[in-house]
Image (cartoon, rainbow, N blue to C red; front, side):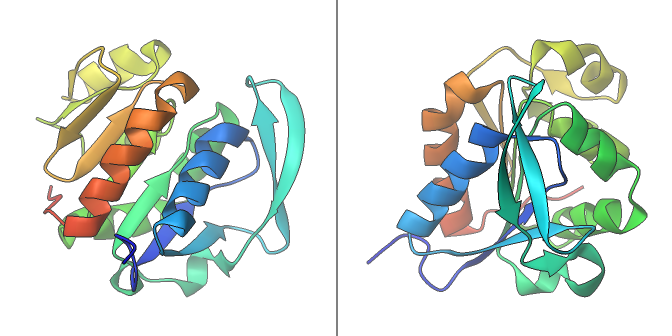
Length: 185
């Protein structure tokens, strides 16, 4: 039986997400039997970027951020990309959605620039995590214990640095989503 059968996983993204940081984890989640919903602030499609500057594929949005609740999901994925986290950080509904996962002790996975959303949600203080090096100072200033490792797990929070880390990121994400370890603030 697949590790994530009967699990609903939310993927929070806006246009400007890094293509591989959404597509590779979503593919892995589906291979493991999860039901995956792409959640955004607008209906229709959101567009990916590659290498933070080339617009690429479009992905269909399954649900609006205003119509979902963390209670409907067993895990949350926040992909990176430069524009994606910046857009999410400005959206009060997105930030409240992220906070609700931590308040409920549900696992969260975020890669590259994605942890910027966690800073705005005020859930990184005292946590060990990693990210792209360009936001290291932001995370440290927000109270995180930043480390330069391919993947870091801290109480159900899974973080990685870049697309190069996707294989280990996806493995740990599936592991955490399958056991529902507590991720609390």
